[in-house]
Image 1 (cartoon, one colour):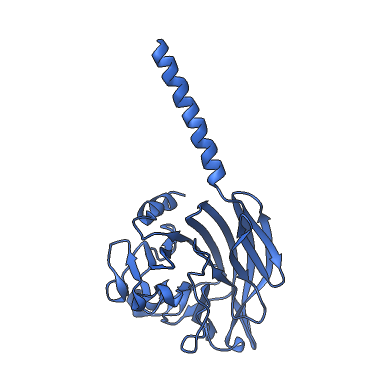
Image 2 (cartoon, rainbow, N blue to C red; image 1 turned 30 degrees about the vertical axis):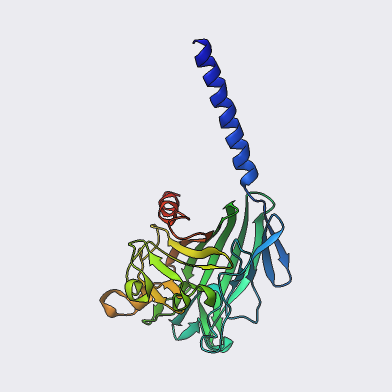
Length: 303
């Protein structure tokens, strides 16, 4: 090996080491801490989101979900839609119960265990076990959730939401648009206020995305001098993948298989059956191209 080749080798080695160190230091430290009836997740000490587990709520949910601007990209309830709780998982019409809206007596998803498995590193991980119950009826479902929070960069945050639902009896879910993983956007980001909602096929707004199966949807808008938003990615291993999306220009979107069931009939799940679902939420700066949501989905689909 000549002198120039040796010099080039050591320069490349040093550059690789430098980039590796830079990568490590760009990774934010993530912590999870139990505070009362919620678990707070922070990036380098700054609040990202709280996972709320109150027995007085309809179900566990995330709020706020702070974007890079440190303002929440999601919203909590309003007079017209009091059942929209930021970022949440629920379902209506489950064996006659309602685990999505109306009073707690209609049905409630209750946390019975929430453990912090990892904290103070490149990711924080919790495990949450829940029971679906209502007065006067046996519980139809229990679920176990593994929630992983990470921040690949200061402009991109991940919530990985993996849930296994176990049927405790034969379960029938009537056709409903109120089902499974959902997000209510902050009004500042809504399409009706100038925001953009776009799916993996490049179709936009409620008119272009409603009822369309797609791997992901991203929702974003400029505010406070920068563009930011939130995307939901469905993992290809999911039951019902790719689910059609229930979308609204006022700021709601959800991959919702129960609104477009096969043969337009109820969804039936047998006692003992387990349904595994995985979603990745990406809170990001920029639009869907700048955040490279398409490439993020490819990486996620290979995990």
